Image 1 (cartoon, rainbow, N blue to C red):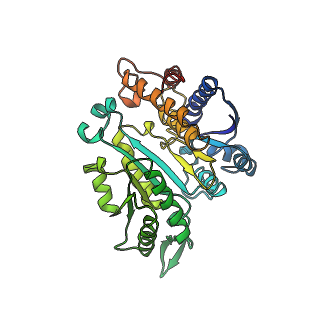
Image 2: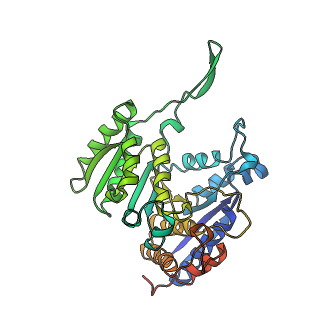
Image 3: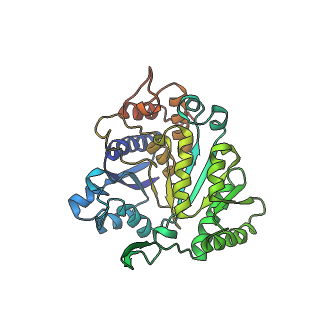
Amino acid sequence: MKAQIVLLPGDGIGPEIVAEGRKILVRVAEAFGHEFTFVTRLVGGAALDAEGSPVSDATLDLCRRSDAILLGAVGGPKWDDPAASTRPEDGLFALRAGLNLFANLRPVRAFPKLAERASPLRAEHATEVDVLMVRELTGGIYFGRPRRRETVDGEIRAIDTMVYRESEIRRVVKLAFETARGRRHRVTSVDKANVLETSRLWRQVAEEVAADYADVKLEHQLVDSCAMRLVTSPGSFDVIVTGNLFGDILSDEAAVITGSLGMLPSASLGTDPRGLYEPIHGSAPDIAGKGIANPLGTILSCAMLLRHSLRLEDEAQVVEHAVERVIAAGARTADLGGGAKTLSTEEMGDAVAARVSPNER
């Protein structure tokens, strides 16, 4: 097949890890007879400095006309001014809104060879983890209005507003149920229905959606008890679906189970196959340019890109199995504890690419 993929390296270690993701996609194209073309554009702080916006209209238009987008990371101390009117992270919000990407998928699965040393949980808990976090992306408190600061009786107060429409909830919950059908047929809907009106609506809509999926079991869980359960019994979850704010927090908590944020991919999806793919970690400016960043989260994001946007399931599995074999063979980047087989960013990418083959499924 032919596909155009936009590369948005961004800031910090972004260019280093995206380079390794591109390497894997090139290897997949060679091994399976596909034709992938790549176009690189600026995003985040780099775009803010060069173009005056964290994502330009031209870049957004290019993304709309492409088959998939691979992003590295945005932000860093250079742009870390809380009083700034525009920040690198605004580029992500603009991409999500401009591409109508309403759901963020974050698979969290511990690699057994890493669980004993890298995970903060006991190995018997960490190795049983296989959960998919589905986070709503375009609604909730991050986008609600009014949002302002004001002075009342001589004191400054700040206002943020959490707003959800029924349609926003329904589409992301439906996606969670559809995904659960390809997994273990369980959905946990997370809310704060004992306090928040938006959560009461969320729970109502989740029940309505569940009525169309008799083969999938729905349970409701309050966000605070879910946070505790992720630590004490993470293997009891299959698919977790929740709102923007709760999903942001819980998915980062779940990520720690693997022992390294550098291992985890994500996909932001909308109503059509085109999606935005990125590792969940930040730009890590303290290690940028040192060649020690872990590219595996980006490489696994490429597997999600192949699966969800290009509909190449076999190729996606080959990439995932290649990562598993590299880890099983003892290869590590510095964040994974290093050791006798400590690899650089580029070396880890080479190690995975060498195992991408149609014969390795």
